[in-house]
Structures are given as C-alpha cells and as structure tokens.
Length: 163
Image (cartoon, rainbow, N blue to C red; front, side, top):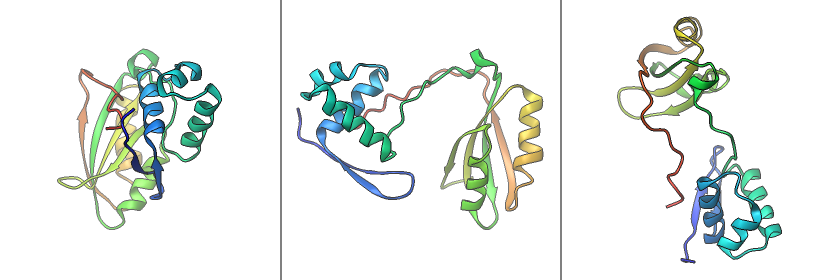
C-alpha cells in the first residue's frame, strides 16, 4: 500500500490526521457502503475487528457518513433547484438558518456572484415556491435569491475518492 496520509478538516474546523490505511478503508466504503468489514480487512491488510474500530472512529470524528443515497424523483420529490443567495451582514447566521430547513440538502458558502449556494429538494413547484418566497427570502439578512431549477439530473456521484 502506498505511504500516504491526509489531514482532514471536519465541519467544526478541527483536523484529524488520517493514515493510509484509513484512507483505503474510506475508498472501499465509497465504492460500496455495504461492503463487509471482513472484505475491507482483506483489501487493506487488517482484521475485521480493526476495520470496525477504524470505521467507528472515522464516523465519530465526523470524517465520513455511511448513508443510503436515493434518487429524489423515485421517492416523491419531483422538484429540485440550486438557489444562489446574496446576504447583507452575517452570512454564517443565514447559513445556519438554512441548515435547519429539511428541504435544504446542501448549503455552502461561496466566493463569486453569491454568498451562499443551497440545493433544495421539494415535492413539487408549489412546495419550492413556498420554501423560497416564505422561508428563505424572509430570513434576516437575505438580500436576493436566484433559482436554478433542475430539469434533468445527468450525473450524481460520491466517488471522488480520497486523493
């Protein structure tokens, strides 16, 4: 196995040194989140118990999550949009308010034309309209929004690896 490691910064700003074996475990789980620990152990040269311990540590540290990713259309959410938001004042406060909304699946602070980009998943156009006009635009500090409604999803992947 190549000798590599990474310093991972989690959501609260702290860092975790991740060794090459843990990076390899992460890559195995990105390929198949249901891969048995015994198979991962064989691939990375550890026992099943050692893999289980490392995975739990990575989960506890917030380095990764193991989740089921769905296609929103197949589970009743027929409207998705990316919304660019310009903020006056406290961008962090607006971002925190957005993270509390169930419809906001992805909230990121950006440089460029918008202060925030937010991915919204809704049941239909009426639901999207309600979220944008009655909940997002009414947040203190929101100056303007621009919506980019998804017409067709061509690619969605979480396979960027650990590089």
